[in-house]
Structure formats: C-alpha cells, structure tokens
Amino acid sequence: MRRRLRPLEDQSLEALPGACQGCMFWETAKPLEVRCGAACDLDGARRWHRWVASEWGPSGLVAMEGEHILGFIKYAPPEYFRQVGNLHGSLDERRSVLIACMHIQDEARNRGLGTLLLRAALKDLVSRGEKTVYAYATTQQTDISAEPMIGLDFLQRNGFTIVTPHPQYPLLRLELKTLVSLTENLESVLQALRIPLRRNMRMPSPSIESRGEGR
Image (cartoon, rainbow, N blue to C red):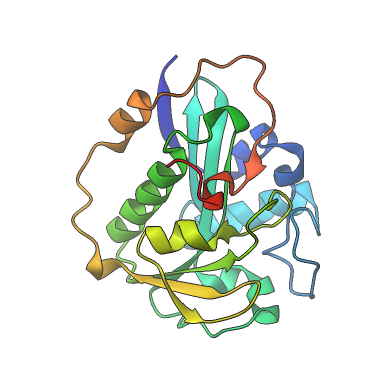
C-alpha cells in the first residue's frame, strides 16, 4: 500500500486517534495538567488549524499508508501555542517554531518513522525560511503515553540541546543553519521503512519514538 507525507490540516483531525482529534492542550492559555487531552474541543481544534494555515501555513505533517495515519508531528510558531506561557523557559519568537508533539502508531514503532517525521518537519521549516526550532521534552523514561511532549533522549540524539533545564519538562533548541542539507526524498524513505502491513491498526501512542526505542 502506498505511503506518503501530507500536511496536517483541519481535514486530517477526524482521522487522528480519539485523544488527538480535538486535543487543545498546547492551544489553551490557562494552566493545564500536562497530559494529552487535558483540554479537548474538536471544533476549536479545526478553527485553530484553519487560523494557523491562513497566517503561516500547515501546522505539521502526517505519514499516511493509504488512507490511514501511521503517525504525525505538529508544529507552529510559539505564539500559536498559548500553553507555552505556563511552562519554564523563554522562546525567541523571531523566525522560530515550536514542535509541540509527535505521535506514532503502535504497529509503526521501532521502524524509524519518528526520525523520518522529524527530518521531514525540519526540511519543511527550512523551506519556509525558519531559523530556530524549539521543543519541550519529557524526561519520563517509562510510560509517556499521556504526555503531550517528545522524549528528551530522542530530541538530543537528533541535535537538540537544552536551553532551559527542568526536572520534568526542559526546553530544547535546534538552529536550522547547523543542519546538513536535507535533500533526500523522504517519501521514498517512508516507503522503504519495514512497517508491517496494516492489520486492524490500533490507535497511535504519543511520542513513542521518544522513549529511546528503535529509530
């Protein structure tokens, strides 16, 4: 079955797992418990994606197998993620983007999909002229399925460095100018990943690749 990368848009939301379809954790201004689905509003999420798309462009990427989502990554300039105001650290908002979360289907874990999605996101951001990428990480080493952040080890292995230490949710940064030119055909790489053929795909688990399992 053909695999492809597509923009994450408001039309994509209903194909996401239940906890992700209307999750508004990052988009909510009031302080929330740090977990996926701490605030949910599907219509509000659709409006948010349309708003960001109209002002900046699509707010992420999805990896598809046929019509099924294998995983996705969400990002946008930090001013669109109002929950940032309740977290530690200061982001330079000039030509910068925050990677909010990444979710991988259980069947697609340990196959390199998380790394591919991250590289595709960075390639997209370079093409848009962005300069700096931030991400809040979770230091949790065991079950991170309910946390709307990517794992610390995964981000550090992919070039991110800590700019604001925190025992649970440090802030990391990557300067896009430090990257080697991203010229590879990532859809060809996606097609070549050894992901089992889909059989009653289960719902994705947040930030699976961030546990330090196979990339």
